[in-house]
Length: 152
Image: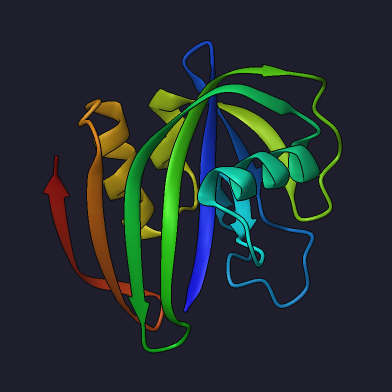
């Protein structure tokens, strides 16, 4: 089972987004996503979050919040468990990323981007400030076929 983290860093009503256009054989090719990646052996979700944000952006997070746990089920990619975070305080300067182009995107324009359908659901939950939630997203090929939300 694959475990990952994903973080949306916030500034001035915008999120730092990555347009995935640089990596070969990328499951997220040409999609807009947050920053994050796979947990390594012995890492907690928080360890992974801090490492991945630093590696992909050059930023060091100072304040972040665990917002949700997302289960992706797919006939193409298997099952993935993702820990979703947002962050509001950080230090450093944004560097070039090897996996995609980093850009600040206004929250009001997020849904205009090329996103996974399931991402639109958790963006709405983040926008509603829904508190902690779990979300199960079921994909058939690249199509979202069902989802379940639990709020806590």
